[in-house]
Image 1 (cartoon, protein in one colour):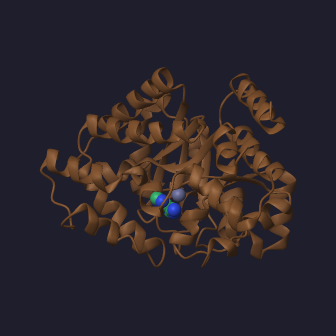
Image 2: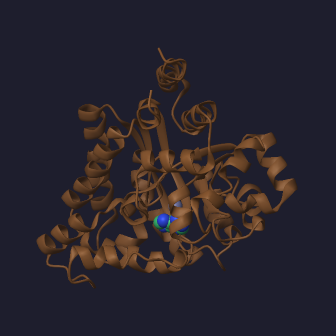
Length: 336
Ligand code: ADE
Ligand code: ZN
């Protein structure tokens, strides 16, 4: 089987996807028009042309500006359904979606509106596309601990509808330690916990995420390779890393995909997964991340199968849900 067809056929879980980062410029413009919201760009083409980032912050500035087009329940539903259709076409069987309530509540959009639209899309994705999903609420780390606690309090009546908590936005200068108490409360409430760490921030932030936040997965984590003891710990504990190769190149974490350390992390025994992060901004959904990375780093089919297997194993679904996906994965890998 040709590489792309093989990678498409492998059942995959996408574990690092910001739903606001799947807002394609075409939808951004149609929603902005529908909602009477001004955008800082004159056209779809001008918007795409502005996607030349120098670091994480240069991306986040645009990403938050674009999210302003999202106002109504139907906007969040349309956004998530467009993502699920793309994901299904790429062979995603399960997706754990990050969403950033503070980006919306700060503009006067109610938390319930965001959640209602996303949750309706999750149900529709299951019934119409056969894609299962979970929602993970992310706290914006450039905002205060107090703001995060207020967000959690607002979310509490709806906690049955979300599965986990995460930490995203500007990493430098906002260590995980800032949110230790918020994450303790999230764990008390029975939420799964994950955090972005070691994307731009130092290995010490990965250690803090593990020790202080007690996260179950590290989002990105690529800077772990600067710390041999940390690498050994991540390998030994089997802590999953949700790596996003095209994102890392777009945000200048690595100059070229050929320079990415994903193969090094994988070969050091880490539970590496491949994800798209913010596909509308970074030039590709999960399948393109797999194909381009496989070619750039000469990953073998056994390694690619391992990466897909890691994603199914690292997801927050029950073992019963995982079993048929793993069986299909084995069948694809065996060429049957
Ligand atoms: N929010 C959306 N994408 C992000 C990323 N790659 N890092 C941190 N925060 C984000
Ligand atoms: Zn991310």
